[in-house]
Image (cartoon, one colour):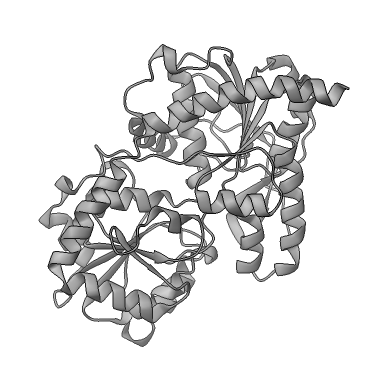
Length: 425
């Protein structure tokens, strides 16, 4: 595996308008601030280590951003460590860009170096708690810092690195990644898993002190009431003979297994539209354009434009099998879309088969096409699933998710004291 150094890896970048737009679009999801009685008062200074951050937008960076905004609104003092390049600050919170490497085959992803000067900044900040987002190299330093300073460390498990090793044709790295992640997470006070499926997998891998921490969705922004003729025409893109619109939203990356949608793209009854960008886009265009495929690619959307696009579609298709959660599935369901997804990975936990959508065998292109056609031809079934999907999403507000996080901060503080005393004995 080859790595290259970016230029000026130690220089912090200024916040640019695109990043400001992302921050504004994501922050509105939190709703009203939590009442003071819901906050963990023992945690006032928090250090966050995230393996992915803006300008990259993915599940890790979005969760980190929303957590930062929640902690800011609750009056905490923060410091954030993220791979270069990152914005210099967010609403007054300093973001320290750590020297990083990039993968030639995956240029969107930066891997932070084991940069020990981080520990000096961490010691000077004197956090009450350290929060790691999808820990790997940066998370390793954060875990070490927690042990050195004697403060609790909470870690999110958000990236299936062993699974990615298989997706990228390097299965021999999977045991190594599993061992590294187990070492990092078991060195933390608590590990937060996003779904029961992922939690069970981590338990089988001998991860300790596991808790369940899901994700939320902005049901005010993502709603069926945004449905419009103008956006349906944009998604349809002239494919007037189609029965309806099947939508995919997400990165164009190899681990998303978008080749599984080739049968959907080739069916004239289905107008398949894909929203997103990424390093694998040229290959996806080629694969989905074979054999007369008519897939339409829109590119990256944010905020109200993205919400309008969801609402204008009829069904949502999601073939990825390595997801630990699948935030876009919640957004689709909040928009009233039944979901057709692979029956593997953490995202499968979000779908009630036959009620809010269908789970189909992973990598089964024909099954994806058949279920999509079933929903587009059976209007009554689609409407029933649409209502059920919306009702499910309404149970997952970000305010409730952040309330759970505050309770885990309190638990980690109590447990951290005991673990620190035990390790000193």
